[in-house]
Length: 214
Image 1 (cartoon, rainbow, N blue to C red):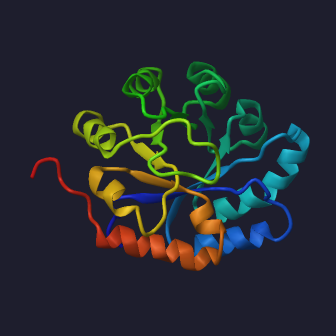
Image 2 (cartoon, rainbow, N blue to C red):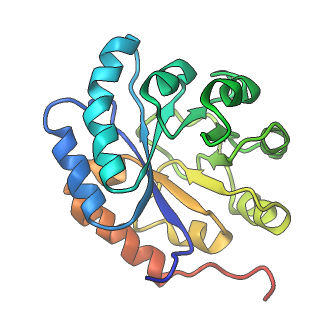
């Protein structure tokens, strides 16, 4: 199968109990997903670890990277594939020391070129830009433009993630501008997750990346 211009990076809803493991399996069965981010809030680490365990196993079975949001300590406890850090969630150097050289460390950079370059200098494995569209997952405080993706791809090899209100209907410009990954949550989990994942793949295939060499 030819490599897609952009790959899917699924972010969990805040409620991952109940039948969510079955929903995750259906989503991952619907096509090649690069990563799944475990994102829960206001929960102690022990309770979070219990919820994470079946989801981590499902990701491993599908060869999907299991990334923990915010918490370096939870990522270490779980032996996760990596951690995603906000600007106030921890230090990249500390995460690398605690999680090891093979851990995938991503950093939220909002709409800031400075934050992204700084994250790269500190050894991040990817940077995340957004929000590109209004999001119902979290309050939109920063708005990123397509020019940010185009600029990043023209200079840096470090992968970039686009996030914020992305749907199959609006993702085409992000793919064409150079987003290596599309981070999505509500657009998958609000409805039939398998059909929604398939719709993303159709949209990505229909809109190949515009080469910067053209």
